Amino acid sequence: MSQRIVIAMLLAVIVSGCQKKAEGQTVAVVNNDEITASELNAELNNQNASAVGTTQQARSQMLEKLIDRRLLVQQAKADGLDKSPEFVNQQRRATEDLLINMLVSRKVNTSQVPSPTEVSRYEAGRPEIFTNRETWTLNQIVFPIPKDKALSAKLDAAQSLDEIAQILTAAGIQFTRATRKVDTAVFPHPIYAQIGALKPGEPFIAPGPGKAVASVIAARDPNPLSAEQARQVALNAMKRDQVSKFVQDRVKSLKATAKIQYQSGFGPPKS
Image 1 (spheres, rainbow, N blue to C red):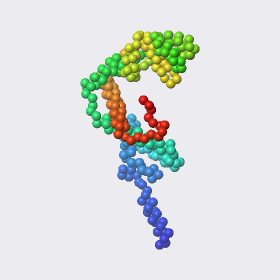
Image 2: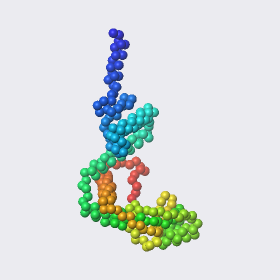
Image 3: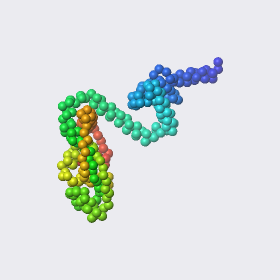
Image 4: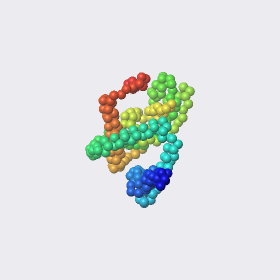
């Protein structure tokens, strides 16, 4: 047997040994790239499989989506996109976000569920979401934020929407009127308390990007929650607060012991 034939046979054995097969925990092979049962199950868990159809239908449809995605990924790699600086930066950011989410989830999932007394106390402290929840009809004036501080002070001191319109007209500033409905649950509690302290008809001004909106409450309609709805909303809100506090406390603790070096001109902002 010639040396050339021997080498060819060895190569054939090596190549055949490297060919992956769709068996065992491998549910599909796409150009020798495996898709495992755990990957498929993870995707199914992220979807509402029951809404797609039967379990087998859902698995088949999801597997086809995974195959399509794997083909597109292979094409992107063939184009060299996985070596680009943009990809490397976004991949690092995605990895960091995933690790942070897992860190927070582990903490939250092991936390004790609030007691009924704690939930009731939380609801009582946020009437805008629970006991006094309303839908407000707001009459509004939208106008460009003036650069003149004296003019801004006049607008802040105005006691009615018509007075704001007069001040803007006198200053030659164009504005538009609008009507909007808003759920009081969207307001942070301190803002809700400030608005609640205003006299009837007194406007409040909310600045935005380049524009400000002056609003007056024209009507208040009750928007109550059932006891079960209130409890679920409270639990979700308490969970969000818990996550926020955990992140703030952990970052503060980590910064206290971390060694952080800044390049000149890139230091933290002055407080």
